[in-house]
Image (cartoon, rainbow, N blue to C red; front, top):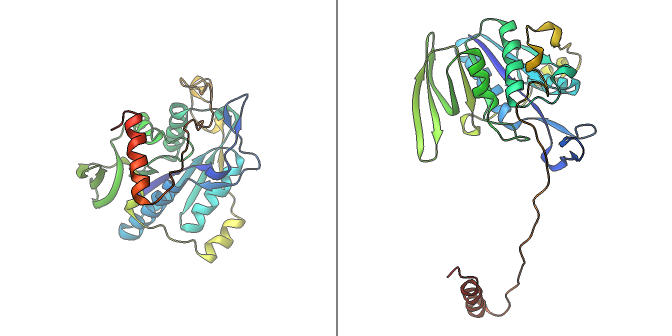
Length: 261
């Protein structure tokens, strides 16, 4: 079973800064982590391998510093890691990103399952996984909370819904995006962490992929961010004083004055 896990290095959400001129994230000097949802995808890939055998390959598209995310994936037990990095990929929206990833996967060759986190915490679009499947022409299932059965030519999963879950059957090769309910990620082993420090990660650039340059980076991105800004706090706060009964009376009066009651 050949399993590919797509991961992304994202800024620590408590440290996000925006470049006001380009409306892009400032990544230099900002602590980065592996996208939390992708950690569950890595774990699920490792569990599938342990259950039925195979190979797990982690890939990431990003700047050179994304090497650290791939080394972390290796320390968890992934067999092979590949970084897709080139200035030509900079500024990619979800469509350009998924296109570039699809070309990297085509170069890898045969695969049975692609695993992605449900979404990235820096964009929250949840678009790259489904778009990647579309580029590759394979079926996909989003928000998977459980892989119920997997064998040659058959895959059954539970997709999380607001009021329960759907049971979906499909045929590999297929792409799954997973939610945190699917498993509990393992810690890295000390031996693998030591090995990861000196790991030579292959870096694939534009010239290494069979790509249409018009579909890369900003040129290949039909959507662009025009403005990013933090939400403004406009509401007024009032502190109600007195005992509980008096506070309830004042609250009801305030709500009536606002037309809520």
